[in-house]
Length: 114
Length: 117
Image 1 (cartoon, each protein chain N blue to C red):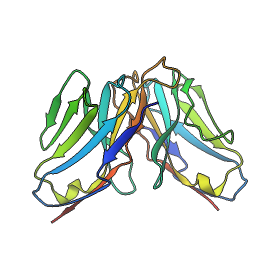
Image 2 (spheres, each protein chain N blue to C red):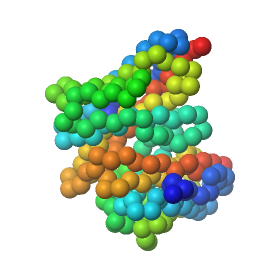
Image 3 (cartoon, rainbow over the protein chains, first blue to last red):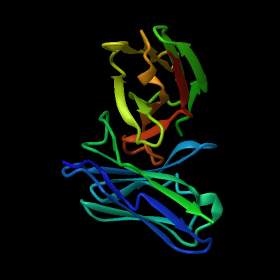
Image 4 (tube, rainbow over the protein chains, first blue to last red):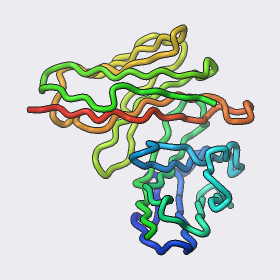
């Protein structure tokens, strides 16, 4: 398996534009997590899914952020409209059975909003 | 919700010395405590984990200890090498916001470890 795959690796966009980040989890994994990493706030859990269903979105910063998981092999995180303070590295991770098991991270998407 | 505090934020040691990183957590329901290593520009990767029914776990030069009563756990690296230089994150797995499901990992703020040759 190629691991968790995220795209794009880098994204530079202008303030106000819509940004869509994509993630393909490891085949067979039933949990998918979206994290945001910044120097100031560290690694923050934004939302996670179990069997494509959102379980906890309490970490989503505001209504500009939305996430979907239409099937077991694909998820998106969308920011609309984007703002400079959204600049961060966004990681997707997946795990099998969620509880007490390793979460495998993707390579991350470095988002810069200018 | 869960709150994880990690100390120190930076740690500098000489090659061959030991390094210790400590974390505390707030939610007594948390039952899984992984440690991740993140090299510059790369993804976090699991290096060791411990479950709540175990007090200590060792894997070659790294070990983790857990004190559930005090709600703290620590990472110990012995005989440090320059390639151990990275950011280390502790995490605690607890219940989701609705209290119905585990799987939610809360991370500490990270420790930048520098091992000098």
